[in-house]
Image (tube, rainbow, N blue to C red; front, side, top):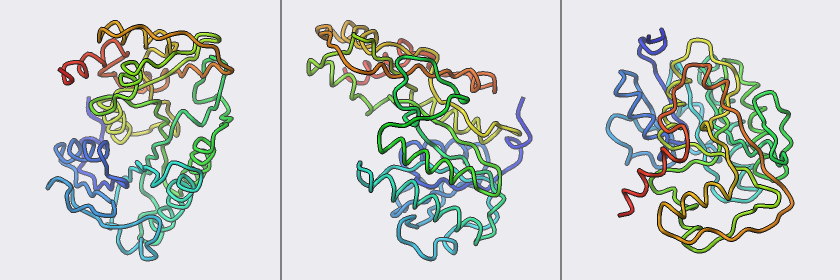
Length: 285
């Protein structure tokens, strides 16, 4: 059954309208919503997405550039550089600028959906974590994302934070390339990994936007966290490569629970890596 939000046409802004944002925007536009895509150079966006040219880092007139009368804003950012300064400027400063611009443009009451990462948990020695587990990030990326989450939580309107695990899908084949290059896997202690297919990232975001009363925090992961060696062994066998050599390490990662997301009514397209990776094999042939 469709919710009231899904039935009523919305005005939706996607901030950071890259690959996932564009796919999401096309899906929302096809459902009858008016979709705006914000990025520095938005004019190559598909016709169904209305371009909104703005720079979260530099525009002092950001509020004037935002569309009026918005219902929802998705924030799907990518750092300009993968270091502490890049994460701070894009996620912390950028989100603070956006929050101020939403208020100055009359959009303070919109639902804000912010894409974060399970990296905010840090290392957990293979333990299970969920939305109630206190984050203890050890890397700069997790620390900056946690700062950004706090900014999102101070948004005067409704907010939802989704922490995605490692995203895989067409063009996101780093693990396959590592196996082909002969990379090792950590077996002592077992290093646990979590993932979600790109199709499900898009599906989860659309689902959260369509919910009438979502929680403020969800983990976006599939049903099967597993050890690094388990998935690398399986992938190696699937592509005809040698299984990875075992190594020892210091930390065991974490296992993320998607129970809250499941209970919200979302059904995964690819509930585990055994379902999701075969589509990538077909594209590589």
